[in-house]
Image 1: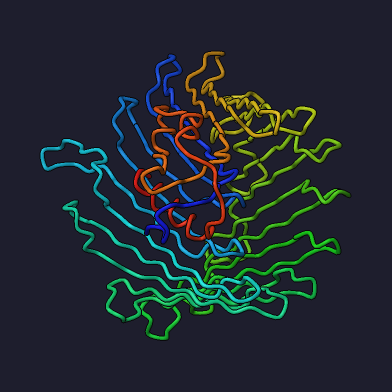
Image 2 (image 1 turned 60 degrees about the vertical axis):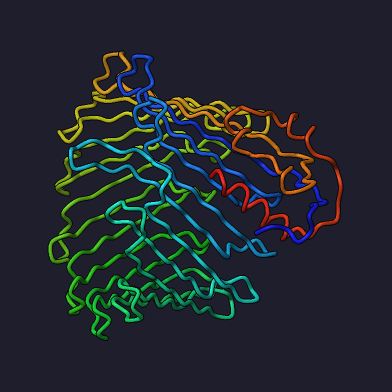
Length: 427
């Protein structure tokens, strides 16, 4: 898509370029063993318009996997179109691995429509796959969802139909229905799947919720009927308790796996403690895998925050790794975070000591940079800056701005389409 006018007289103000770099040091020896980079660009309303993910699994400057996302929004910031194109690695017959080669191996397209209240009415998902890596997306299937809402904009019904051969014949159908109380809390959710789309229900899943006067969820019961024959096969029951500030302090989950006969097979219990700012400072999860009162695994999470309530340190300790807990920590991992003046996370370092001998066995580092693409204007199609050069450090924003001149009064949708097209050339 090219703008109607030869010259684009507008500013693209306050576009945000966000870059995440994840580096994996699997032996904690100071040598990077793998790297993942994510480049995101957001518009003025913080909508993600383009994203590029590249994986260098051996940190050898060879991209093994590449994933590109392009999004388009309406005037109300509703996502109307999303396209994800993926370039996968694959193995040759001789066993050699072919990394990302610039040829699209799968394509996912999402198209949404909304009503006047911004409720999602229809969602169409189209999948295209290159199964034999010959550059042709020969396998296709489509999933279509239609939603309906009550007067309070609560989703009450959703019908999803899947056409796995893209021949116009529905192969699977799933119906979801919801019931709400007077406070718009979801009290019942029922999902029924008809795998052959022959009007015979093959699977049923049900959730029943109860809330307290403050709308906190206090009980949740999930039931699975795998044959949709009316006999419950599995049941999960959750009980929650809250403090006076509505913080979750106790969570108990009981699992009744075998025939839902009322006998609990396993139980997970979590107890939380908060500071005066309602930050979670200690969380202890105990796993009683046989529901016999003996705790086999215990996870202890301890968090520390700065004066701005940013999480700066989180320590996770595991007691016993499947054996009976004895109060001795068997594994420890620590995450340390650094923030900028705007409370944005700019660095996170995770270290694991698998046997708690004081020697770090694994380390990963995530760094985040954010740059405002401020006062960028486009004078013509050839003047549009290749943002890939910015991402790769070949050009600075200052150099880009020197190449452009300031002007105004171009249709924003036209400019956004132009931006999407040009960033798609490198993403």
